[in-house]
Amino acid sequence: MTNPWQELRSSDGSYILEMDREAIRRHNDSVSDAKKKVIVASIPEPFIGNPKSARVVLLGLNPGHSPEDEKSQRNLEFQNAMFSNLQHKLEEYPFYPLNPAFKETGAGKWWSLRTRKLQIESGLDDQMFAERLLVIEWFPYHSQRSGLAPKRLCPSQEYSFQLARQMLLEKKLVVRMRSEKHWTEAHRQFGELPSLKNPQCGHISSGNTEGSLFCKIVKALKENA
Image 1 (spheres, rainbow, N blue to C red):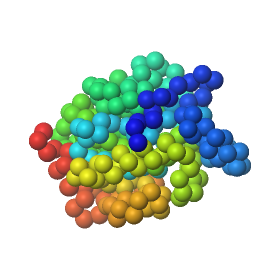
Image 2: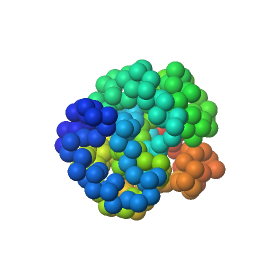
Image 3: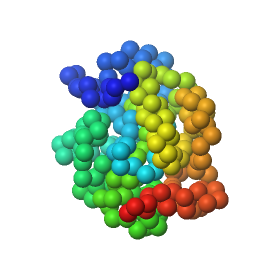
C-alpha cells in the first residue's frame, strides 16, 4: 500500500482522507460521548518520525487532543512540519514535537515529558534524538479520549500496520506503548512485543519498563552515534 497521507487536503475545514471519510462519519454518529469523537478539524498523526533513520519504534493508540493542539496547528511552521512528516519528507527534526522551536506546543510538551529521561540517558542531542525515534499510532485521527474498539475502523490504518511490520522486518527495536488488544488485532506479532509497565502514563523510563528493556532502548538509540 502506498502512503495515502500524501493525498491529505482540507477543502472544508476538515482533515480526513477520502478513503476514511465514510468510516469516520459512521464512527462519530455512533459515539454519544463527545470526547470520544474524532476531531475532524485536527491534522491526523498516524506516525511521527523518519522510518529510515529511526532506531526505536513506539506503537501508540491514537493521538490526543487539547486546546493547545488547536493553537499549535494554526502555526504555519508547525503545520508545515506536520505535513512534511505525513509525506515522509526529510526534515532536520523528523520527530517534530522534539524540535526546540516547538517545545511550547502541546505535542512538544507531551513528548518531551515522556522521553526526557530516555534522551538524558542516551546522551543524544535534540536533532539526533529526533532522527532516531518513531511512533506509529494504531488509529491516525485525534480525539480527546480514545474509546476505540479493538477492530480496524478505517482503510488508512493498513498503511500504519504495514509500516510497523516493515520496522520489525528491518530489525528495529519496536516497543508497544499502548493497547495490546488493538495491536494484536492488527497482527498477532504486535501482541508479543515488549511494552511499558503503565501504558496510561506513557513515560519511557527505567521505572516504567520491565527488566533490561530500558537499557535495550538506550543501546538501540546510541548505536553508531
